[in-house]
Structure formats: structure tokens, C-alpha cells
Length: 452
Figure 1: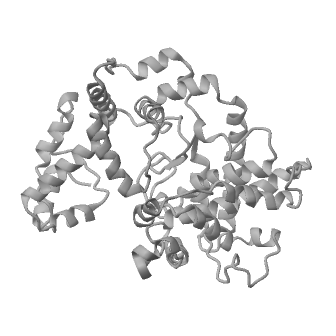
Figure 2 (figure 1 turned 120 degrees about the horizontal axis):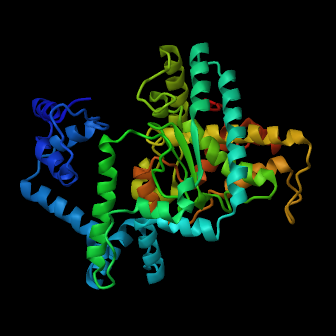
């Protein structure tokens, strides 16, 4: 941690980018009447970025053109038809999508993106199944218990670190479906206090005003007492996340629907899909990044050196496993380099593997009540335990263009869906036992990677 003047001097001394931090921060916080002084502590998350930028040998014109192009790309879809067409042609090259979405889809996406909590309010009040929240909260406790059992069984963690890990798991807050205040219109109005009204004939101005309000709302939190139970994104999305500096797991209302979850269906469907997601997010609290934060979200490494060495050694197995997966769809473009990046994706891969292991254990625990699990019509040939893995695999079915796949492999910490099935199940003794996989099966890895 350092202050802005020290950061500037350090960057200059090390030959990094020379940047006027004083002007930068005063410009950002000026309208909020927040002073950023030389005593301000700043966390530099990615110092390598400044090193790389400082090493660029380009003209000032190139830098200005780049900044201008980034700004233009950001606003192009909010301008006239010619600019929107140009923006789509650019995105088409990057994504491979040849046809623009219908206007109603674009408008709905923009409105939801800008006013997500308002959209979530309408969705929750009109369509959300309230039973889903209660059932999923019970599943979280089942998964938390399963994770703690797996921690107690590890051979690479010393006893004190095991205790600390189980304590952190207990301290992990679960934010389920939506914050309670969202059901009250007056609280919703208060959340959007200070935002500008929209005018039918001024779309770009409306958009710019919303950006200004939204960014200002985030920046204004700088001097406020931090709250752990904060929703970092709105609930009207199909997503889930772990926040290391809050030690929270969040499952918005948008994901509590098929194929991830449905109240009242056989448990193997929900545990195989949503249960794996819950386990995935819990595991993030103990991966290469999450392990650096304690139970209340403070940056405070709590692993012993012995445990850290054990983790690094086992994480290397995952890096090698996924780094050796070939992506045949990209061989024409990348040639011999058409592989996943095992190092970049290690955190997500570890979470996938831990998630499926925890969720299957939690599912088995749920069967102890003796209530039989019915088969699905047309799928009677599968046992309930096999259906757990079928349900898990189904949520990763996807149709992806070559361009989109290329972008994911080169820059996304998540592996493509295919490998989010093959990787964890190749390491899963539970899967291989339930399907009676022979030792020479392609779904059986002789040297299994395992952390949890």
C-alpha cells in the first residue's frame, strides 16, 4: 500500500509509466467533495500493468488514438444508426455473431443494465418463486457442512490452518435472491435518490447522466463504514459470485430458475446444478486469491507456510491438467498453441472441482431422511446418483462461435463449458463409481488432481 505521490515517484524510479496521479484523483473525486491527500493509502492490485505500459515504445499520437477509440467504442451503441451499425460490425468481428439482436432485446438489456435493482424489484414482485429462496438457503448450509468435512480430511493442511478454514467457512455470509429492502418501493426510491429523470428525446444525455450517477454512487462509498452484506451486482441476472474482501457468497434471484434450480423437483437436479454453483463459490474463499483474506474480508493471509506449499503443489496439478486440454475448434487459428491456459484458469478450475465434490457429498447427506428420489420420465435408466451428474453437465451446454471461443480461451479465467464437465468429472471418483467407468475410460484420469 502506498499513497499517490509515493506511487508516482516509485513508478518513475523504476522506469514505469509517468502519470499525474494528483490530477487524476482530484478530477474523479472533485464533484463529490472528497479530498485525496498524500496520506491516502492505495492498493495497487496489478503492478505488472504499470510495468508493461511503461515499457511501451509508441508515439503520443498512438496513445491518443487508442484512448479515443476506447471512448468511441464505449459510447457508439448509444449514438445514431450509423454509429450503432459500425459498433455492431466491430463486435461481430470479435464475437462472430452475424445478426444484431432485435431492438426490444437491446432496449431491455440496456434498461436492465442501467436500472438493475429497479428491474429486479419488478421481477421479484411478479415472477420470483419465494420457495426458491428458502430451499437454496438450506442447500447452502448443506454445502458449507460438506466443505468443512472435506477440510477436516485434507492431508496437506496443518491442524491450525484447518481450524481457521472451518472458522472462515462459518463466517462466510450468504446473500440469497435479493436484499430485503428491495421489496419496498420507498427503499428503492431512496436507492436511486439523486439520479436524473429520463427524457424521451434525449437518449444519449439520459445514458450519460445515468453513468455519472452510478459511478458517483460507487465513489461516494470511499469514506463510509464498509458493510459486508453489500450486493455488488443487481439480482436480475443469471450469475453467482464470491467476494474475497467481504467473505460473502451471492446467489441472485436470476439464477434461481431452471436449469440451475427449481423448487419441488428431485433433489439430484438441484444439487447437481445449483449445488455445484454454491460449492464453487464457497471454494473460491480458499483458492489462490480467496486464501489471502480472512473471515471478515480483511487482507490478512492466514495459511501456514506448510499449508501454502501443499496448496501450491496440488494446484500445479490443475494447471497442468487444464493446460494440456486441446481446443480443436481453434487449431486452425492457434496451431499447436490451441490449448487452455491452465495458469490463468486455475482458480475457477479448482472451484469447479471442489464444487462438484462438495455438492455430491451434500446430496448424499440429504438422502439420509430416507425419502425416495423419483426418476424422470424417459430417463428411468439412470439412477438418482447418476442423474446428479447429468444435471451438472446439462448446465454447461452451450453454443459458441469460433471468435467467442477464441476470446474466452485467450482472456477469460473460466474454462469453456465442455472442459468444466470433462475436467472435474475426470478427477471425480464419485462420478466414475456411479457410472462404473472402466480404468481405461477417457473419463478416468489416472493421476487425479484434488484439493478438496
